[in-house]
Length: 270
Ligand code: NDP
Image 1 (spheres, rainbow, N blue to C red):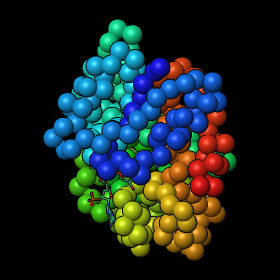
Image 2 (image 1 turned 30 degrees about the horizontal axis):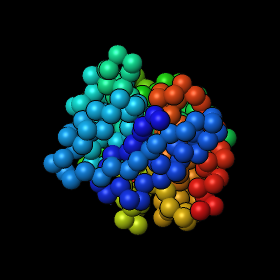
Image 3 (image 1 turned 120 degrees about the vertical axis):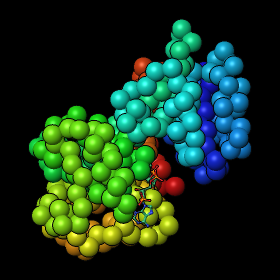
Image 4 (image 1 turned 135 degrees about the vertical axis):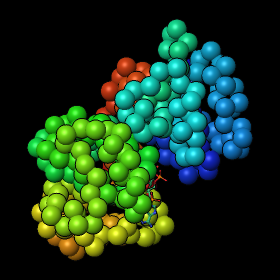
């Protein structure tokens, strides 16, 4: 039986096994997908043990091991290179370990799920951590008009702008934000995980057609609530992104494209 897994610590909460088993059922595949939560020092050894099995095809990697997974990959996709983080490893028939970051692909797919197009839009990323980095290439690839990034620690956003060096991409500080009317505003910070808000004082939601929070929970996040109050036409959390990034990984591993809608609906009802 083909073996898959997700590595992270903590990992008990992970929805990945449920999501991938639903995808597998759609395609009449029988797979094993386990949660592996190594101690900090033990990640590389436990990854090696997993891939020592001849039927191990691939794994997902989540916090805090995404950066170390990158070091283990023989090849990297562009999003993984910029994110400096790998969330999907795939062992090919020749034994090569390919590293991908599918988070940004998942984000773009879930923005489309909301009925929103990205071409020619002005998009703002709040936050400059690994999740923001992973989103940049997939968003630029959609032909957006402008992609701006801002962050509590501005130097991190500026560092990313200098690395990306793309005419449509820029870092914006507080004065710059006041004249940037974004169509789509994405909270990539981890603030929602602590029931907090990033500083939104200089950001206008009046022309915003979608306020997206990469975090997800049973109820609307504080960010979604605030954005709605300040005029955003609609808001969404990151559950769909989670399912879509998993779908991209599933396709890399199996060559099959799962249907994500029924899986997102099933998880919402849990
Ligand atoms: P990182 O730790 O790499 O980055 C965290 C970012 O959040 C930094 O920009 C940090 O700013 C900012 N931040 C943290 N707390 C606050 C705060 N109170 N106010 C303002 N800014 C704050 O995390 P990741 O980029 O890996 O993940 C970020 C979020 O994205 C998490 O909520 C994670 O769960 C979510 N995520 C969701 C996915 C999905 O599939 N839905 C996939 C991947 C991530 P500073 O630089 O100033 O410290």
